[in-house]
Length: 335
Image (cartoon, rainbow, N blue to C red; front, side, top):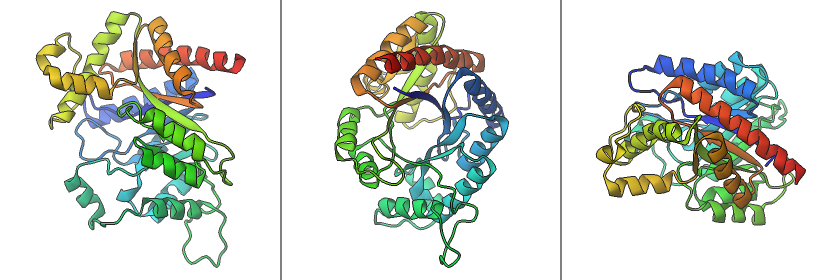
């Protein structure tokens, strides 16, 4: 493992507002820069009462303006929701304002329910144009001549790094075919992680953008001074995910010690399975759990996320985890 990064879903905790979540986002980004995280990525979600990063390009610019060295990007933009030219202009503008610091991860999922997807796209196309849209988008970031009929300005010549995101085998195949870096959403969909990484690495075709495969895997982490406190803090995420799975999305709940009263056993089993690529506990416990993931899957980069209700506890969790990940990076370099 060469680097470690942070994925922020910009959660809105119970008792707080979207404005509070966005303020916490900037505070966390500044702290992440100090803690040594390589990237700070934000995700696109719509019509979600507990997530404040719907206008992803805007919040990326907000974070980039508040920081100075950390890379900032999308993890990711759900490209079927947008015209490639619009995304090229948005991220070309960001790359022009913050040169050398902007990343663009692209997903194929809607990032919303179908009613919201229709509201975003207005016209739902029956065909899957994702590969063509990715190729078109990359072209807008390349050098173009004045004779090119359609150009992204700003955007042309910025060469914004483009990633393919995925939670299935489709994204792995596409990333390998296009010669792009690949990020797997194992923090909520780990089932196909091993197979997807194998396909990506074994079928990768070098490109002008990337000479050899580059894999990022995601993991949830909840770290605290003790295992007991970390388990208590993580209950917010488990409860939020259970509510989402049962059609009751909402703000990030307060933590609880009575999860069994809130979540039926069959639902809890589904939640635990979906969130199994995670580490929870003290620094020592988290170190052991994350090292197991790194040893098993050999990612080039690990990106972590944490859904913790209390902002101070969330900052502390990312601080503890940065110390752990820094040690793992050093260990990888020495081996």
